[in-house]
Length: 254
Image (cartoon, rainbow, N blue to C red; front, side, top):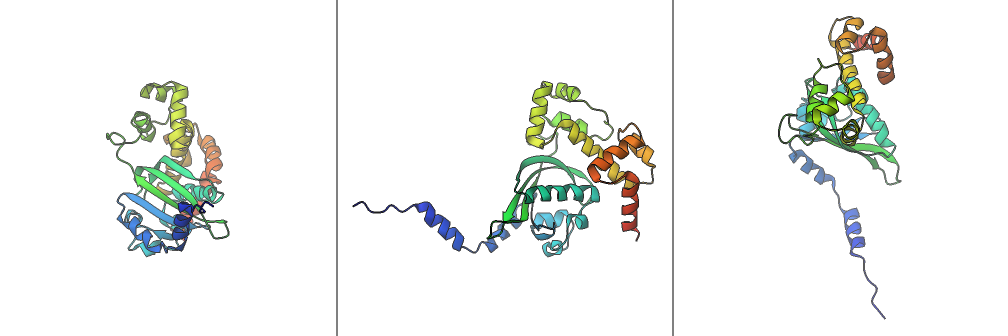
């Protein structure tokens, strides 16, 4: 009779299940220019690494515990982070998304982001974990999307409020369809949706940080008029520009 074969994978799985992996999180503090975090279902931070702490100018890593993105980030960024959390809590993973993020100092920087759902022992999604890796400058040789970099540079320039798929595709030497495919593959959205949300984020910031009229802000960021900005703004932020401004003005000066 043949001896029963032992599957080594079962032994590995058993060993892993018996390990206390808590201290392995300390290794994440060794990562440079890579933020790591875990958040609960309400968006409260449970654990961050040292890079996260330094990027958000926190006195310690523990200072992030219990805080949400609305405590740490500008509201137009916090809302986008929360939308990601809700998507991930439904079981969807965000893999290697290239995105432009405004940090604590309000400077826009390029990151590569990954976000995963975390389950409890009953198999329910109860938390999210993520990493965001700071990318080199668009013009640098190490930027991971050199073919798309010229188009991204134009879109990042806030003075370039009117761009087209055909113009951007020509700039990078691709057909319109090939350009759109590459853009969606790496940025998980279409070029025009990306540029629209970027302009809306700048408008959202300007509504809080400046005294300019809504009409002036609409013109500055490439919207045909105040009504056009209001429609687009409510679609993304669920609020009119005037309500957004009043709400955050009260939060700054209660």
